[in-house]
Length: 247
Image (cartoon, rainbow, N blue to C red):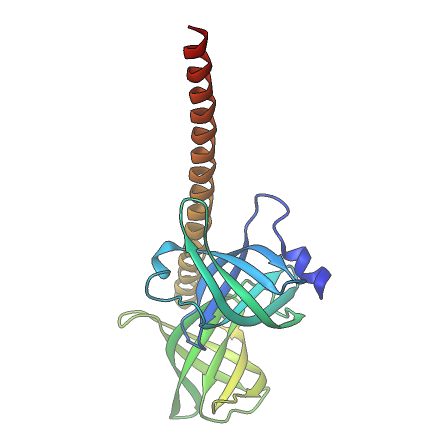
């Protein structure tokens, strides 16, 4: 497990993306893992500055999910510190528990929170919600019981004006501790119009990740620029002092 988490550490300029949830909130936000130390059970995660004031508080319970190739790592803990300054823009997590498992999805998944309608039987529909989505399927939560292996019709309400409809196959069902069931659904049929809408949605979600990566790069450039200016200022001051003594 230690090796697995060490492998998550950035070895080059490529960011290691993760998803973060506070206090079991259904709202997940994107972050970038910048540091993990399993001996001290701590991790640091870079987050967009807009979340610091209202979303993250010291002591809050936190869950982090990170996908590296075919292994998905999940760790939980609490926020021990948050820092936003010219040197650092991150939260520090005290890790309590670590889990990892094989990722069975072919396509990249994105955390969402969209209401949806399930068409399970003729002229019968159920209200549910989709908590993550990809080009190959999604994760659905419902209070109603659906049989594994069955095909279901899904209408996903992205906005009041945009609905994406497709047929999915229930490949697994897991009882939720809070009530209801979580269903892993594989996309098996979608027409061209809805496929185009789904593709546009995935492109939009990918853009949100790119914006975070760009913010991370800009923050690092600014930090190193400040360091360089500070060092130049110190050398300039030393030069002025010695020059004045020489005169």
